[in-house]
Length: 191
Image (tube, rainbow, N blue to C red; front, side):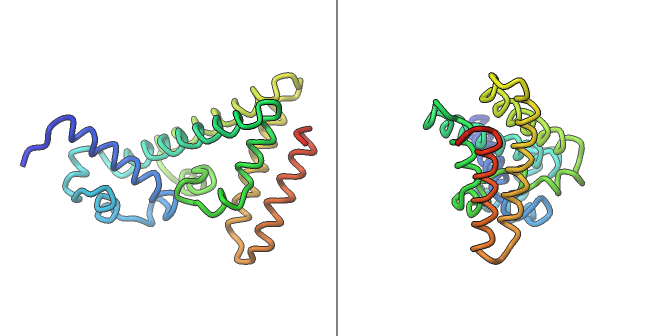
């Protein structure tokens, strides 16, 4: 049965969205095409009509994940317009973000995979990293060291979330998030 162009486009978007979540949950190699396509309600055969390769899909999925991050950051910053850095720190270093891997930060979930991945996957992640650093910098624009502090803040946030997700002990995980959040707010002046 032939699929309309509109339906094909919708199917492609569904696959990218599903891959964005599943790659963050399982890694690029932790989910096969059959299961990925099944989660989007399609067969494996449809994959090759939509994408050149799994790497092609991975780059698109990383881009989609970073778009979702940008939306969540914009919403959080609006909740505390007088102190958006505090709002972003609280959002990022929260137990909810730690626990929602499939909708969480793709830098933490896919960074190690991307470092070993294709140039297109690394480029998609790099674009997202640059955008997040630009957002942090913009929110500290009055500080002459804004870019330097934004890079330190971004690296600390990613590292803290990674550590919080990596341990079994929930108390230790919570401690990592809390201490990192408090220290960032103190050092950036976002108390």
